[in-house]
Length: 299
Image (cartoon, rainbow, N blue to C red; front, side):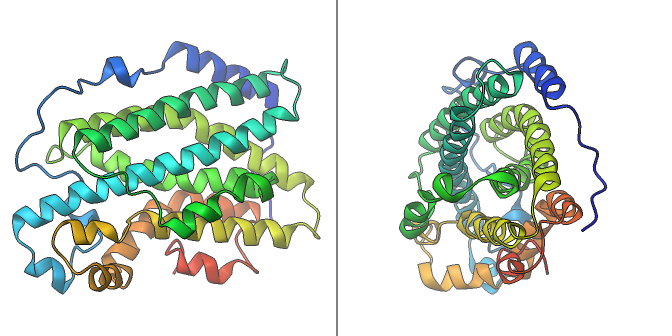
């Protein structure tokens, strides 16, 4: 297995991230004007990132339906992001529980938990403000999610965090730069992107360190767990109930979205950077290959 990434000093990295967190952080309660009116006619995501874009169903939808679908889809993605943030916090606290709390590493993990609390509140407020239900993942995925903080450890734990964070990060970077998207959504995305950069650095280094200690016997489990978790993350981004909310047949639209080359391509595009990293460190491969393909993160 090829390892090309340098293992850096954990405490030095954590100290830099702590200083950065103290220097620049956002309070969504203060930094977002939640009372500002939504702009009539503006989309909530870039049009070409809608799950049905390019399908026959899309061609039959009215312009109003397309905008409304983008509203419900951004609510679904935000509420799924919130669900995973909560799992992430549980996993980080599990790590802190068995660590020395006087280390910078443990203290930064706690700082990240504080960031994620604010992000979760921000996502919840955005969903409420745009008038959508908190879709979240489907019920069986929500129930399965309870297992992740229990069975997750090592590189797969931090790798799962990275897949969720970096897929969202790339989608959000594109959205926050699109002036055709609602200002509220763009601001929420901007805050999340700027603060998540620290979290990504922290998690990437933990993956590298974990892989340096990984035994050949453990590797198949780590690969399987990461691939399976990633599949559930990407497949859950758009809850099928969003289609019924805009007047479409739920099952027909869900099937069309999953088979849509444009939507599959969007997920693959969003995951390009993280998949390259995970492949370089040796976490992409059997027995997780089938799950990776079902996630749309690889072709």
